Length: 185
Figure 1 (cartoon, helix red, strand yellow):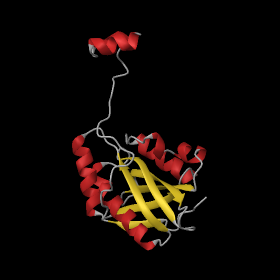
Figure 2 (cartoon, helix red, strand yellow):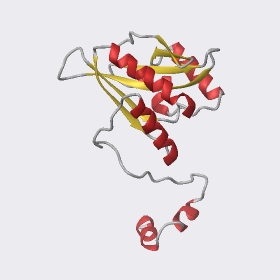
Figure 3 (cartoon, helix red, strand yellow):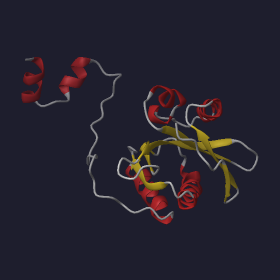
Figure 4 (cartoon, one colour):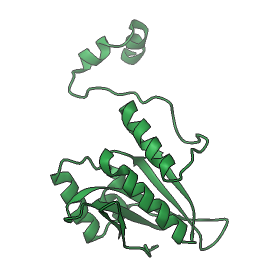
């Protein structure tokens, strides 16, 4: 398990802490975020870090000056197979657990942390947000923090969504006749 070396950094009046993923501190941060109404996707939850085999997980938490939890996100820490001792950080489904007002300070803090830790070779931030405006804001915040787009390798252009509260009949009614025949077959 790879432990974070940097634990706390100040950025634009925010307190930014790097916690061990799956730790009690991470669980507390998650509970605080959920209580404030911040959505925390499964890949950013403490239970995810405890039950997934990986070199480790780090959770970057953002608090205001009074110590209130505002947002955060998980980073999976993978060891490089090409360069022993070196790390690759990946944040899957990045976006929902980081409210818009704290995205820039959190990403600047992450960028500073990466520049200080010589073990880190690369950071992959896989942005996921249903709202196009939110994706644009996150992209701008990433660019301002020094991140650059990578060629798409594991992504897709559109995400299909369905309202799970609808009945099967209502879902089928939204599909074309040909698709309905194939589903029923």
